[in-house]
Length: 115
Image 1: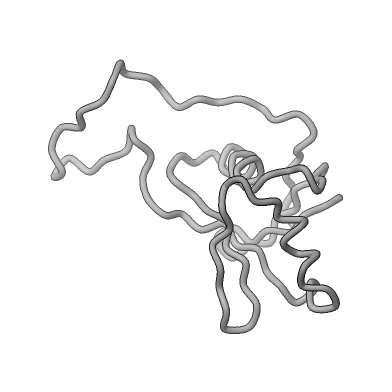
Image 2: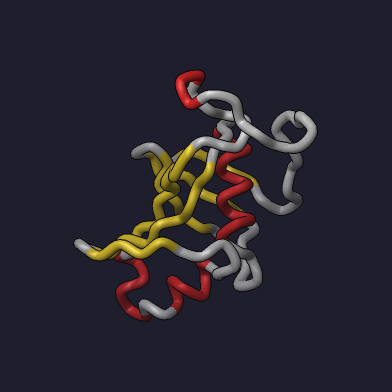
Protein backbone atom coordinates (compact mmCIF):
# COMPACT_ATOMS: atom_id res chain seq x y z
CA UNK A 1 0.00 0.00 0.00
CA UNK A 2 1.03 3.62 -0.37
CA UNK A 3 1.39 5.84 2.67
CA UNK A 4 1.18 9.60 2.16
CA UNK A 5 3.41 11.63 4.48
CA UNK A 6 3.98 15.39 4.50
CA UNK A 7 7.67 16.33 4.57
CA UNK A 8 8.57 20.04 4.71
CA UNK A 9 5.21 20.99 3.20
CA UNK A 10 5.47 18.48 0.33
CA UNK A 11 3.39 15.33 0.22
CA UNK A 12 5.58 12.25 -0.24
CA UNK A 13 4.42 8.72 -0.96
CA UNK A 14 6.09 5.71 0.65
CA UNK A 15 5.26 2.56 -1.31
CA UNK A 16 5.30 -1.03 -0.09
CA UNK A 17 3.95 -0.23 3.38
CA UNK A 18 2.00 -2.99 5.13
CA UNK A 19 0.20 -3.32 8.45
CA UNK A 20 3.45 -4.81 9.82
CA UNK A 21 5.50 -1.73 8.83
CA UNK A 22 6.51 0.36 11.84
CA UNK A 23 6.73 4.13 12.13
CA UNK A 24 10.45 3.74 12.67
CA UNK A 25 10.83 2.02 9.29
CA UNK A 26 8.82 4.78 7.57
CA UNK A 27 10.87 7.50 9.29
CA UNK A 28 14.16 5.85 8.27
CA UNK A 29 13.01 5.46 4.66
CA UNK A 30 11.91 9.12 4.48
CA UNK A 31 15.00 10.54 6.19
CA UNK A 32 17.30 8.57 3.89
CA UNK A 33 15.29 9.56 0.82
CA UNK A 34 15.58 13.27 1.63
CA UNK A 35 19.24 12.86 2.60
CA UNK A 36 19.00 14.22 6.12
CA UNK A 37 20.13 13.04 9.50
CA UNK A 38 18.55 13.83 12.81
CA UNK A 39 15.85 12.60 15.11
CA UNK A 40 12.38 12.33 13.61
CA UNK A 41 8.89 11.23 14.54
CA UNK A 42 5.66 10.73 12.65
CA UNK A 43 2.83 12.98 13.73
CA UNK A 44 -0.79 12.07 13.07
CA UNK A 45 -2.84 15.24 12.56
CA UNK A 46 -6.61 15.57 12.34
CA UNK A 47 -8.08 19.06 12.46
CA UNK A 48 -6.54 20.66 15.58
CA UNK A 49 -5.48 17.36 17.14
CA UNK A 50 -1.93 16.05 16.85
CA UNK A 51 -0.45 12.83 18.19
CA UNK A 52 3.13 11.60 17.99
CA UNK A 53 3.25 7.98 16.89
CA UNK A 54 5.56 5.63 18.78
CA UNK A 55 8.47 4.06 16.82
CA UNK A 56 7.03 0.54 17.16
CA UNK A 57 3.51 1.61 16.13
CA UNK A 58 2.03 0.75 12.75
CA UNK A 59 0.95 3.89 10.87
CA UNK A 60 -1.43 1.77 8.76
CA UNK A 61 -3.13 0.34 11.85
CA UNK A 62 -3.31 3.83 13.35
CA UNK A 63 -4.99 5.22 10.23
CA UNK A 64 -7.41 2.27 10.15
CA UNK A 65 -8.69 3.23 13.62
CA UNK A 66 -9.99 6.50 12.17
CA UNK A 67 -12.52 4.62 10.00
CA UNK A 68 -14.36 6.96 7.64
CA UNK A 69 -12.16 9.89 8.76
CA UNK A 70 -8.87 8.22 7.77
CA UNK A 71 -8.75 10.23 4.54
CA UNK A 72 -8.82 13.45 6.57
CA UNK A 73 -5.84 12.47 8.73
CA UNK A 74 -2.40 13.76 7.73
CA UNK A 75 0.86 12.05 8.62
CA UNK A 76 3.69 14.53 9.02
CA UNK A 77 7.41 13.82 9.35
CA UNK A 78 8.58 16.06 12.18
CA UNK A 79 12.24 16.64 13.06
CA UNK A 80 12.62 16.54 16.83
CA UNK A 81 16.34 17.23 17.08
CA UNK A 82 19.84 16.63 15.77
CA UNK A 83 21.43 13.23 15.46
CA UNK A 84 24.17 12.26 17.90
CA UNK A 85 26.79 13.37 15.37
CA UNK A 86 25.15 16.80 14.84
CA UNK A 87 25.72 19.34 17.60
CA UNK A 88 26.34 23.05 17.44
CA UNK A 89 29.92 23.96 18.44
CA UNK A 90 28.56 26.12 21.27
CA UNK A 91 27.34 23.03 23.10
CA UNK A 92 30.88 21.78 23.66
CA UNK A 93 32.25 18.30 23.13
CA UNK A 94 29.96 15.32 22.94
CA UNK A 95 30.94 12.34 25.02
CA UNK A 96 30.26 9.13 23.12
CA UNK A 97 31.76 5.87 21.97
CA UNK A 98 33.88 5.34 18.84
CA UNK A 99 33.32 7.82 16.03
CA UNK A 100 30.91 6.55 13.43
CA UNK A 101 29.51 8.16 10.34
CA UNK A 102 25.81 8.17 9.49
CA UNK A 103 24.48 4.68 8.87
CA UNK A 104 23.02 4.47 5.40
CA UNK A 105 21.08 1.44 4.28
CA UNK A 106 18.35 1.02 1.73
CA UNK A 107 15.21 -0.56 3.04
CA UNK A 108 13.87 -3.08 0.54
CA UNK A 109 10.32 -2.44 -0.55
CA UNK A 110 10.24 1.25 0.38
CA UNK A 111 10.18 3.73 -2.45
CA UNK A 112 9.72 7.45 -1.91
CA UNK A 113 8.24 9.72 -4.53
CA UNK A 114 7.17 13.35 -4.54
CA UNK A 115 3.65 14.23 -5.47
